[in-house]
Length: 623
Ligand SMILES: Nc1ncnc2c1ncn2[C@@H]1O[C@H](COP(=O)(O)OP(=O)(O)OP(=O)(O)O)[C@@H](O)[C@H]1O
Image (cartoon, rainbow, N blue to C red):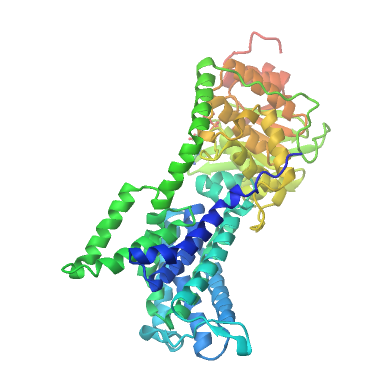
C-alpha cells in the first residue's frame, strides 16, 4: 500500500515565508513609505483576497460581487456592536462572518448554475442589489450614506485584565495574526481533496462531472468560503477604522479586489495581499507628488496596465512560475524527450499487467446471465434530425459488447444518453435494473457507469497521477465531501488504486508528467485509466483505438480484455477486425435506428448488416 505523499517541513515553507514577511514588514516597509495604517489596511485586503483567490484563482469563478459579502460582514458586525445587541467584538465578528457566509450561500446557489460571463453577471447584479439595499431600505440599520460610526475596537482578555487593541501597531499585530491563521487555513483548503477538485473544475468542468463529482456543490463551497473570508475582513474593517463606511458595498470595492488579485497573481493566495500593497502604496504616494493633482488616478491606471501586460501571471504568479520552471526544467525536458521518442519510434503501449494482478475494483463482474445495462427505446432528436431513434438492447454482465455503425449512425449520441450526459428525448436506461436516466451525468458515474471519450477529456496541466486522483476521489468520497482539513494525497486506498492503474496502463514512469506532454497513445490510455479509476460497474469505451498505431491497437485490445475480467464493457469502435476479435455481442446502428443485435458470428453473417454497413467487407469469411 502506498504511503501518503504530502507532509514534511518543505510543504510548510510558504507558511514559514508568510510568517517571516509579517514579522519583517513593520521593520522594513516603513522605510519605503508604508505607514502602520497602510500595512494594516493591506492585511485587511489580503484577508478579503484569500477567499476570493480560492474562488477565482483556484476554481476559475470570476465574481464581481464580493463587496456584497464584505459589506454584509462589516455592517452586521458594526450594527450588533453599536446597537448594543452584542458587547464582545469577537462574537460580533463571528456573527458578521456567518451572516456573510449565509448570504453567500443564497447568492452562490443561484450563481453557480451559470458559467462564464453569466456567472460573473449574476454576481455583479447581486453586488449592485446589495449596495442599493444597504443605502435605501436598510439605511435605518446601516446609516445609509453616512455608514456606522463609533464601532468599538476588539478587547483581549476579561475583566480587569482586558486590553483594548488600540489603533497603530497593536492593531497591526492583531490583523497579522488573523491573516496568518486565515492563510494557513486557505493553504489547507487548496491542498485538500476539495482544493484538488476545484482546480480540476477550472481545467475541465465537464470531465469532473463525468467522473462523479457534484460540480455545482463544489463551486458553491468555494463561493461560501470566499463569502466567509469577505465577511470576516469586512467585520474587521469597521473595528479598525472605528467606522463602517458605506462604500464597503460598492462596485469599486469588488473591482479593486479583482484588479489587486490579478496584479498580485491569481491562484497564489498571497497575490491579493501583494496586489493590495502595490495598489494602496501607489495610491497613497502618487497623491503626494506635487503637481500631479487629480491626474494621480490616470497614472495609477497606467501603472496597472503596464503591470498586467508585463506580468501576465501577476507579480507572485511570475515569481512562482519562474521558480517552478527552474526546478522542473530538467524533468520537463526529459519527459518531452520520452514523448518525442515514443512519437518517432511508434513505441507500442506494453501494458505490464498480468491476469493475476487484480484491478482495484469493488465487485468483480460475474459472467452470468444478469443484465448489467439496458437501453429502453432510447431516442434523441435534434430538431428534425433523429440522431437516435428508439434503440433498445441489453448488455450482459461481465461481457464485452460492441456498438458499431457507419459515421453519423448515432453511436456517440447513444453513449452520451447511457451516461445521462445528454438527456434522451424519450426512453430510459437501466443499470442492474435501476433507472439511471434523469439524474445527471455525475449521479450516473456514482451509480457505476464510466466513459472513456472519443476525444480525450483530460486535465492537461495536471500530471498523470493527479488526473487519476481526481477520478479515484469520486468513488472513494462520493459526489460531495467537504474534507478541507486533509491533504488530497492522504487517502491510502486512493493512492493504491492510482498506483495499480498506472501499472496496468504502463504509465508509472510518467506519474509526474503533465498530461499535455504525453504521447498520443499515452493520452488515450490515461483517458481509459480515468474512467477505470472511478471503479465502474459498466465501462463505456468510445473509439478507444482511434488514431493508434497497429502495435498500440494490439496492446490496447489486450488491455480491454484484461479490464473485462472485472467489469462489463460496452465499446464503440470503427476497427471492425478488433471488434470481431473482442466482442461477444454486437449491436448495429444505422441512421439512428437499430439494424441488428446478436453474437459476433450472427452479425458477421447478417446480410442486412453487410449491405448497409460492412459493404461486403467480411462477406468472404464464413458466417
Ligand atoms: N448536438 C448536436 N446537435 C445537432 N446534431 C447532432 C448533435 N450531436 C450529434 N448530432 C447529429 O446526430 C447524428 C449522429 O451523430 P453521432 O455523433 O452520434 O454519430 P456517430 O455514429 O457517433 O458518428 P461517428 O462515428 O462519426 O462518431 C449526426 O448526424 C450528427 O451530426
